[in-house]
Image 1: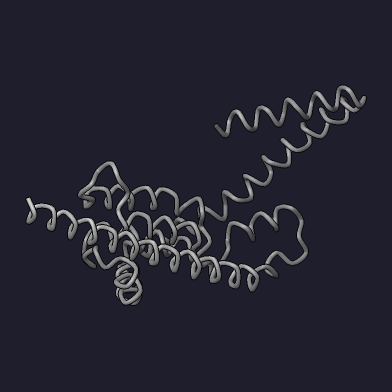
Image 2 (image 1 turned 90 degrees about the horizontal axis):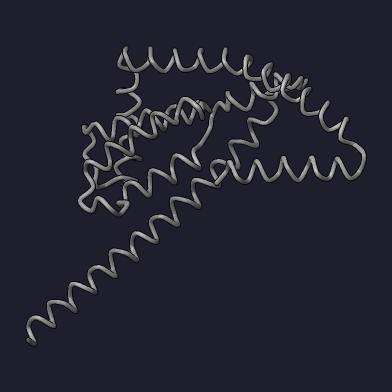
Length: 209
């Protein structure tokens, strides 16, 4: 779907440029933007390699296990269905740490691994479990203490102070995760109440029959 959307936007832009007599400027802007994109990608590559390497060192040295124990009260509250020592919880913690460091690209494969592990524990394979829904909320609206990716983009774009967004990122990510977790918990409670109501109705029907 995204391919169709982007293709449509590019086509519309060139049609408008052709009718407005700015096709040459539009073509030149596209070429210049492509060069800028390559430069920014190279700049991001260094930051991503640095933080991904640090994450690997933290995992191999056992630091992730220490962080997992530190986050245990939080993860137990968010994922009461998942055993703290399970591989699914380990993948979830790795994803949370990567997101806290602002490594959105590095957190993606960790998030996919966490979903695969959660799917193994899911009893209804064709329906997302409560733990999977909560994880998607945590992954999407994660608290970023060090927004490394955004800082790298701002630095590559020539920002005089690429770190000035940190406080804003903290506030917005905290608000987002509070709203997301609250909504997920409320919906989980409604789903549980509906399931209990259905079970009582079914038991009453069987008893009457």
